[in-house]
Length: 145
Image (tube, rainbow, N blue to C red; front, side, top):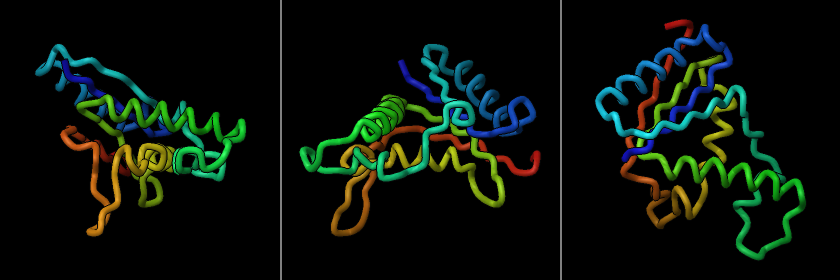
C-alpha cells in the first residue's frame, strides 16, 4: 500500500487555488490507486518555526552538546516532519507563489526535512539525495491562476 502525503501551504483557505489543485490531484490519485493511505499536513495551520539556534539540534553531531529544552522541543518537530516525509511514497505539495516565491511556511518545512544523513549527503561532487524513489507532484499557483 502506497503512502501519500498531501501538503498545503496557502494562507487563503477555501479561496486557495493551490489547495483546490492538491485536493483534485489527491482525488485522482486515490481513484487510480484506491489502496493509497493519505496523510495531510496544513503548513498554514501547523507552521514549523523557521530555522534558529534552537531548531538546529538535528545538525549537531551525536553527543556534541547537551540540547536545551527549547532545542529538544524543536528537534522533536524536525524529527516528526522528516519521519513523515521519509514514510511517504508520494507527495502532493501545494505551492502558491507570494511575492515571487513560495510561502515562508513551506520554506520552513523544506528546511526541517533537509537533513544531512537523512535526506541528503555531501560528496566530493556535491550534495546527493538519499530519499529517492518518491513521486512528487507540485501544484503551483499564483494570482488565482
